[in-house]
Length: 74
Image 1 (tube, rainbow, N blue to C red):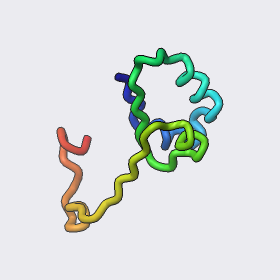
Image 2: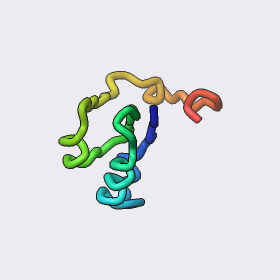
Image 3: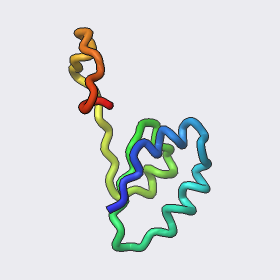
């Protein structure tokens, strides 16, 4: 299993191109499970994926003023 955490947001901010990213993904062996996270996944990536999930905040304690906690959020 390979997890590319926040890779989609890195694409969004142009830290690398989609073509560069897909070139690297193509190097993986078929038995590798690839998980890519982050907001703003480009349509080209979504169309090639087997599974796409979108999470949406319903309620968050930050709205009540809770600060980020060491060891939990960072």
